[in-house]
Image (cartoon, rainbow, N blue to C red; front, side, top):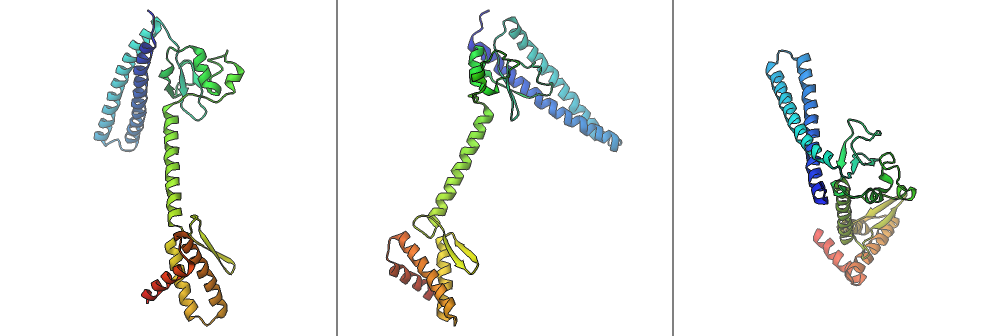
Length: 264
């Protein structure tokens, strides 16, 4: 029969789902086998737990047999008139293979079935796979193609791209919030030198609080040097806040003095 793209993608999509389901069931079965062996060795009298795991293992095996039967029926259709396929090994350096039987892979190798390439010509697959193309599966792949980054879009790549976009959006929101709350018109922080230490003021609220604390020492300190240092810091704060709101420094100072008066 003449295989169409739609037909090949339909068969392979179902097969990919079946293979994925089988992997999940097998993983669960392995965990149950480990638990069963643990109870048999350490708690042999706990017959209820042992019976429960034996039941779960038997149920999993039954499901595996059913899935294998379904896979075989679809594999039989494929074997009648095979079409091209592409499989991406699921790891950081995974290659794209033309089948599940590549000599560079193992029985435990996990794949992502690239059903979007089912029944496409090999050249298209290799062109898109680029450096990820397996040279065993695609020995005729041109060197210039193998040196090019992969263009294949996978669910994993989409998820990573979405996660990065979300992180970038959160970062931009955080930066925008910091700039809005900053004590300067530019969104930058204020820095003051206190002896060998540098004090950082990130928000307008902190800047106002700093001005009020400094004002107390300006009015009550008997140390001229300390008073002068506090006055200089308070002028910088007033100048920065005035610039942020587009008012005169004297007007901003008057606003802060009113706050100080209310503070008592």
